[in-house]
Image 1: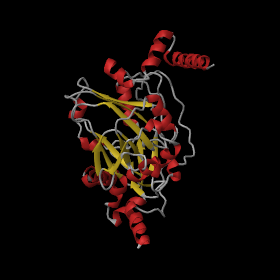
Image 2: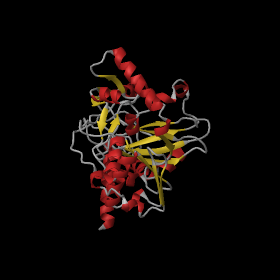
Image 3: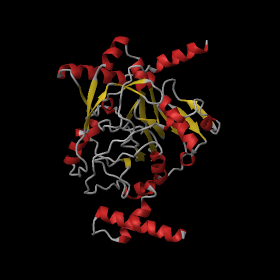
Image 4: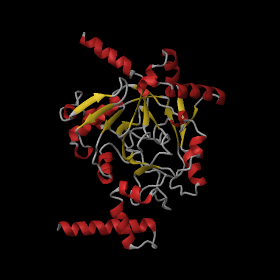
Length: 374
């Protein structure tokens, strides 16, 4: 019975792949592709850039009610800390590293505690992970519906997987003419319901370089003066994916879903912690609603410089799970002459960004908690 079900499942997948790639692809080729995509690291080593850009249209993303599983988390995160061989905060404001745990084997309780930990610390780093892409998809779905990108390529048969791949052959013109300061972003913030708890696994890294920077949106908000905080809380910003659509058209790639723009608050409240976080960034935020062009550009430039210069609320590492709602991240392209960098990401969506006027900043919440213990 198990063999029969396995064969039926394989037939179903091959049929779907055949519909996806067209009649010119043979069943043997599809079967080979199905086998290879189970090991993206091997595929990257053997073929380099292996992404496909299927000529297929996607439906618009459907709205959904999101309830973050971090709301069920244990404030002490005992299921994680009691089972980790080592655990420590990387910096005071952002980043925690856990050793001795495999993401592929986390219990439901541990996932609840991880969601809470990520909500509080922004990004959590794990070393020596055995999780494969199929397990990664299952893991991601534990936190929300997986985002399917409208323009990016993906591994054959895995439209929910976003691949990171750069090597010595990558054209360097873009990176030579672009400042790293312009790379800060939160993923797909132009969607009505953007990314939430997100997994990235790096399985090929250069000998040196290739790190990712994160910055805390909580701390970025706390570092602003009360007058700036009050001013920003009354504003909303437009987020647009036009840049990615333009790049897809320039490279003659298929645009599989219509261009999206969304309006989100500049300061948002995290649904688990209740803390306020800054929510603008130079990649997808295009303007501030209600301000003139010059006013909008001036305010956004100040905020971008504020994030980029916030060295005391940034962290730099590899291998991670992070919360796209309250962090900004920025890949460092200092390795293009050194070696190859490959990894993959799954991106669960979360709630529509909102600001609860009664919510507190992280600093206020911590001060209140400290006062209550005295």
